[in-house]
Image (cartoon, rainbow, N blue to C red; front, side):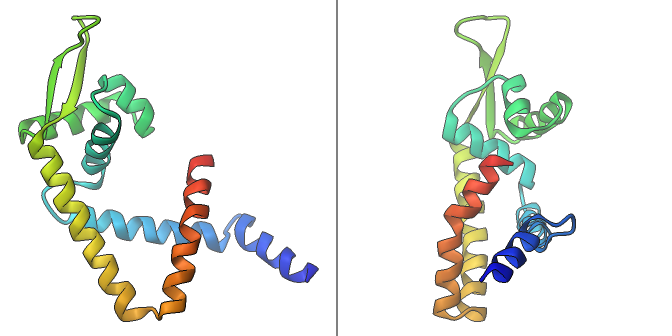
Length: 150
């Protein structure tokens, strides 16, 4: 029992730990699915944040997305150009700008999410049995908690 617990810790914490490698591979593959279309993964992330949290200043988005303000500026420019977000003066401080998702942005976000979810569901249905799918479903809250702590 102690050796199994030690092996689990090694899998999770080693410098080249399997968990980190596998999660990284999954993240890259999902990113590729998002990038194969109208919006990139980074653009989708910003749209999703605006959809969940509401309008925000570009500087707040940069902090929340853990990217440089210049990167957010480029993302917002691309999204605004396609009508997926709109900039308006801040109601409190008219010198500042806030960005909000538009109805078109919500539609693109929903469509992209559905497409990626359909792809993942097809793979899960074809390549994993019911007990494996349940194990993956059971791991989601733990992975979400880990993501929040990183």
